[in-house]
Length: 502
Image (cartoon, rainbow, N blue to C red; front, side):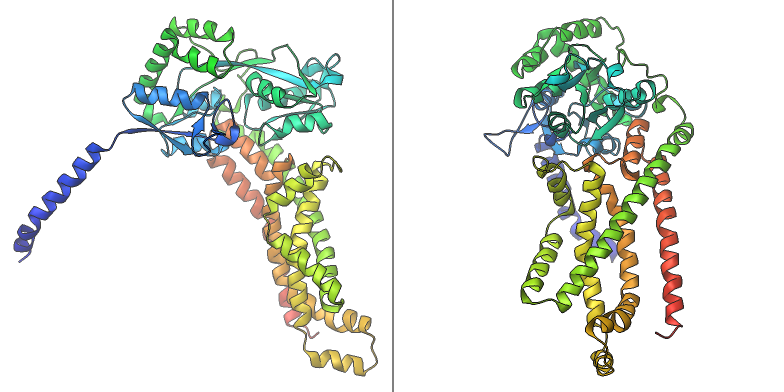
């Protein structure tokens, strides 16, 4: 019976297989490349004239490489900090978005030939240009850079050697805007980013001295080394015939450094990832467990920041939440309308937007320190949610109890403090604990304001190590160590109050 059914369907199966094979053959092969348009020109950005199209020198180099291997370039939008991980897991064939050649990437990925040489340069306010010319002049000063970059590693070492304070950002725009308004004293980034920002933002000077020299590369999965070798040959050919030079001249980033780099590469001379900065102590060159041991103190310090921020924010959120809830229950129509508007505004907008408005949006009027802005942002956000917990708990107390208390001659304040609030607090304890644990984790969002909390420090560790396994495990263990005792305490209080009459 089964054989007859198979024979009956055999022609249809053959047709389906042929259709799939022919369809696959008809489709053009693509070279999937990952990048982040948020990085902007001249790397990758949305074309201002056609927002649905991309432009930038990495876009053109990706197209050059795809053509060289007989494919069509297909872009995949990946957040810059996740490009390495995305490539390693096979989401795209190659990552290109101003990606720097580092020991960590060479140890964990297949890295192409360097196709552009850049210089790490120091930028300071115009008024400080004559006295702040090097990292040694910045003792006690705040120096900004982009996280996960060579510049950040340089600043970490300069912290130990020169006593400056490294501040990491998640983008390359706000370091320079904060420099101009005085939140930081200097910025260390590559000359391509510094010159691009200087054209659009006056008020700072790029110092001519070179702190270190690095290179932009493409990154591929370690299993994709044969494709990497093919792309290297295409890059060499483009160096010989001037195609790379034409691309970089089009984007006004060609300089005298590039011919020297190309001459060295075409002669077969190896190019180190970084020149002028000793990478022998990089965590990428030591065992992962030794790297974990070195980073553990930093993670513990970041945990203290997370705990302090969470406790202070929650305390302020509880205070504001109680006031809002009391106002909504006992206030007049105008007060209730205003408080409802606040709650709905906060609950209806993302917390990241609120943090950006507090720190960057109000900077022209009020320059809040990063920690203060983070504390206020978390507190004001969670106060809206806490107020709903307290309001519902207050309104859950039976009306009969309240009327009995009033009959006994208690004032409204006494009814609230002696009868209503104690019972409402018991009802609110469990959701309050849940909110605190949520706030503990949401504190990771304040990294956008340059606050170095646990998750941000873990990201830096993972980027330098080239792996998330050990850093992620350590981070999760520390978060559990912080949240589980609080949850256990809350359960004990609930159990005790459950067996104790009010």
